[in-house]
Length: 453
Image: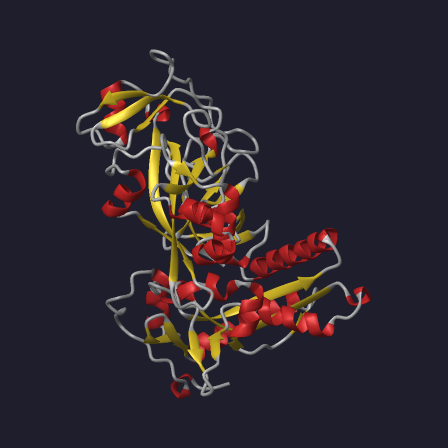
């Protein structure tokens, strides 16, 4: 024990000007942390003491199901290339070279290192299952570090991995982790909820996040008050009420109509006396994929079509096209791919890239596809060749309204799958309050702010 006068606890009367979140203000004023650089903090005596107490709880619960390792924070490029994630991680990964010029990176996560150990050391199914975990620093080049310890570039993370015989064994290991995390959060006294989440670059078909509701949280969650359904907005789904389609006009073929100055969905709906639910919204992007050496970005045009009153979930779309980021198309790109201006682009008449060709680009990049599949070169270079993603809510709809790829004009009588084709149909929309819970059918409440732990 130490006398208070002998301890280094540099308290402050006022919070720093850049501290906006309550936790950030309290940690700085109470002398727990000090900032070294953007997103990089030193944990002083009280901060480190608190961390150690938390780690004791984590270790006690994790030791019940697994074994603790301590792994390097410095990784060679080769292990990340073996998993295909050297390029996928993009600018979020800190990269460097050693004195011999070999590519290295700072540990973003430890799947690659754990797997390399298992590959070399696990020689028989009799050694399975294995659960290995570690508590160590991780590094991510966060584009906008802020809010104290909520968004940082270096942090302490407990990461755990299981190696199992089959899917049944994997489910068992997953459940062990799930229960261990519940015990950890219970012992820490946190009021939390477990929500379905997007796995992102980590991969996998099932993922949960343990969330704490807070105004400072940057995640939005959907949770049903009538049942146990809860999901991050990036993963959330809902049931939609049936929408009555418009009746066809004329011969039922796409009908060109003049809509002067009506580029916004609301303006088009009001002008044509229809609901936005009967309109097709177009959102055009360039999908960016980092090259294998991480030195450059390959771009691929992607357009999402969804109901007029819905919004695109860029996280869902990113996962679908397996790109590192999306950026909106610029005016010259809209002209190239649609030959039309913003507000009036639509799906009729587009040259649609096949799902197989999209997969080839995702796996190897445009130049590699052209080299290995020269007969497809003309298709790849077609200036109107697009990856067209149709939101699943439009499947089965008919006689809708959409842009005509011509200034001040729209089409009526447009039916997806009949009047235009698409590369793939999938759920790419954001859930909104009032829609029906996918489990019980009750209306979902307003979105809630939360932070992941």
